[in-house]
Image (cartoon, rainbow, N blue to C red; front, side):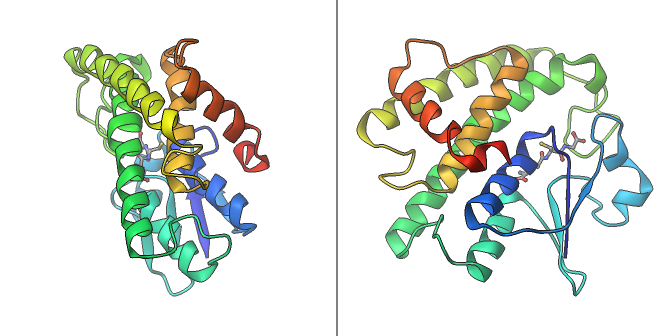
Length: 209
Ligand SMILES: N[C@@H](CCC(=O)N[C@@H](CS)C(=O)NCC(=O)O)C(=O)O
């Protein structure tokens, strides 16, 4: 089994944190996104979508999308459970985790990809040839502020993002909040619940994985 990833990038970090929480070690291969290695024929022969993280099982099955990789390891290494323990909690945690990616990581990614000259023709993840769109920067910034506000509101009522235990929703939210530093959008002092949570999850050993 091999995990193709890039240490600096936020989505591969999601899987690294998940594996660290589980205590699972997987052979990893670095693919330099900034240098465009994920767009080259060699990596596209492994995953034509050109995205990281990508997990390749021993039988050659290729699995991308972090939640799918989470699922694989949750089933093969159930302890500690990070995706819920019954139908309702599993569905709820999956739903909140999706919010963290779509409302958080994607909005931040829109700002990053459309404002960074190194990605001027790489608006779409895993592809080249799509020019940046200026309007997506402003739209993305509005989305990031909304994401931070909703995260803060959520954490006013619970210790963790999807309830009273640490789950994949926390992992994805942590990667989003730290990714936002790349576009110089910190949580800000006013969001006290989100700041309390961020300090707590950042102190877990897995956060430095
Ligand atoms: N929805 C995917 C997102 C994967 C993604 O966008 N990964 C980024 C790295 S953070 C990537 O592969 N970027 C390639 C590129 O920029 O060309 C997931 O859940 O894993």
